[in-house]
Length: 297
View 1 (cartoon, rainbow, N blue to C red):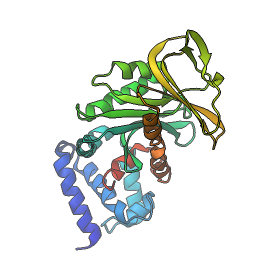
View 2: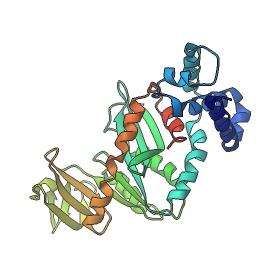
View 3: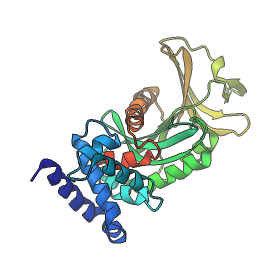
């Protein structure tokens, strides 16, 4: 028996254990998923043509490519149902340590973005829950962000220690308020805009009014964020990004600046995940990629 056929049977058997209801509902759909997953380890890259070349079938590659495209475009496919039993065991294993949850968006084609909630793991990020939508990156809705985090929280063990990390798109009052009310409490380190106003020593001041130079940091404790909708008390860590020559303010509920420095340094771990997603020909439905790659993480 060839290696590709052996992998296919192993993946098919595992999917049968994890997703018995989906096999009963539509066996052909799950066979196609098994074929694509089993092709990943040997494919040169995750284009549909290269996946087709590694499938243990005698059909022409062009036919197998069309098979993949029909699977990807199938509106009856529920990615979360397929993905949940795959990611849950990993989350259970990671719950012995603090779990970094990384939020970010990336552009996916013309006027399309992908909002990702990911788990930091060994200097990379693994997808937890995601949503594709229209519009450019940086303009996702606060309700959507909270909704995805709510779903992600349901996947995590209740006893897990969690810290949420995100750039300036996520450092807004709506998300901070949700995090403050969440039980059990999650830590967070979220970047905010440098022109954000805070209540400091009885006065409202812009964060960029504090004199932060290269190599220096400023730690502000128990302040309130934004004049329009006061949120807090929170702590803020101000540092200077010499690479991009800009102020980086991080709002947090952590009590020590060294903790913020350590954890926020993990936020870029999501970039390789986005790079992988964009390298695949499944780009018109990018959520498919994260289902498949969970098997080889």
